[in-house]
Image 1: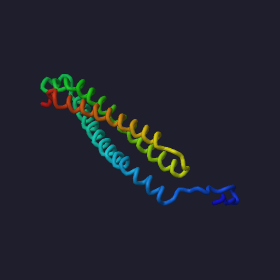
Image 2: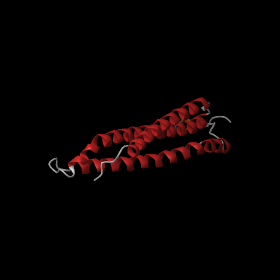
Image 3: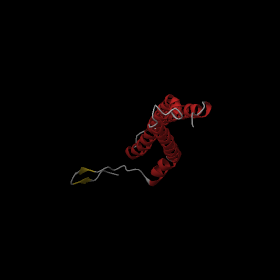
Image 4: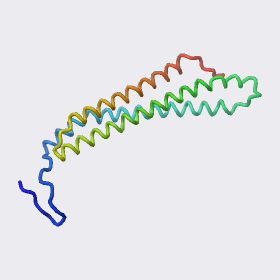
Length: 154
């Protein structure tokens, strides 16, 4: 089909067909589920970080001259380690989410422009899974610290 010239120059003549877009949409289903899982995981991590921060604020508000409660401040270094791990996990979960989002954009743009995208999409998916794995490892380390060391609750 020849290109049709309009007022603003030549128009694209090879737009993707419904079947091509349908194929890209079907290929984007798995990344979409992963993106949903990453969103839920990130929300969980943010909730944990908020609880750690709240506990840290509560412990810091204890007066040093309160002999009964001052010993609870011994939990602060552990809480700071946990907060750092959750913060890193959030960072890597966001990187994974951004990579998945970029992957879907590349897939649709490639289909629209009729460009081979398999290697690029595969690379982005691998990067996303690596980032997600790092986030899960940091989360597992934080949970292990939270459960394995004694809480200094009064």
